[in-house]
Length: 444
Image (cartoon, rainbow, N blue to C red; front, side):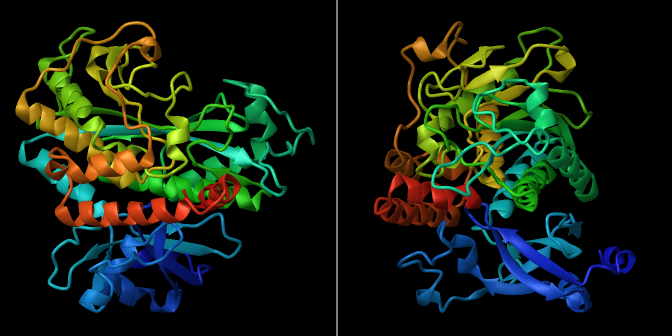
């Protein structure tokens, strides 16, 4: 890690940051001449900092604040090391960190530590998830009272229409996307295909699959920071909020995963299109946890505007082969790449908690050997299916009272997340829809 700064003497300051429960980067700015101390010894800030609400406020009556004297945690660099921050004017590097207790134990309220705990369960069984994510986001002109598509730097026009899979839409913002791909390469984020999506100024970029789910979550977290920051350099906003426009589809964060054994064989591959019994068990585990984990997949007030029938977001609990109306889709193709696509999460999620929920639920299903219901055919929105919670309050209650959630998440994280979301639910009720959008546009 020290070598990075020696190779980049132009970097005069660094940021050290960890993801809080909402995926917000929390940390410090440090002159680069003091970076060696951070690399060697880590840094410190209160445990409560990873448990702030969306405004960055302490949680009322949290035991992490006054009751415990607002005690510090110890934050150490992750395996990622330094990455550049191409969205800033001055050459700057980011050092991702994660939180430990004073005695060296991982802090259970840290989202990254939560995912690591789930992955350790896989490791104990000689299994490794292979993960890829697809991130949808909007480019937005938020300079006026109403959100709208930015003016194209190429044509100087504003196209107020959805342009699904449009090359013209991509070319309209070619300078931004060229800079974005250059930045991804500099940050070692495996950005693959870009497409235009069905919303106004909406795009999707896929990140390549890999056998390190912790790194996949890092990539998604860093990608969201990059896209939002770089868009501002280009004179507009980028947002991963679930539903900025009432009349258009919202943004999802779809996850594809398979699982390989210690010999590198895909345990979902039966040599044909149907997949193995272990794949079905993983599907069942995901479906069984989907209702109670909806707070992870839809963590904000605006999240539930996306999850309505017919809006390209799942609203019922179902699975299917090659069917994008289902909550879980089994893509077709080469059997060696047989995988599960989990389609529920919005773009506004915390990637660490999302992957912990999906992979933890899949492993529960494999451990329990449970069978899913029959796969659906046709339009899932037209079927009478068990439903995902339709309100934020219902999702909070389901997460708090669940008997499934404690198999995936620690008691510390459950308590902290529920307290955070109850506080946000209370204060969001005091805001107008426009004020809520203003909060979510830049944060999530």
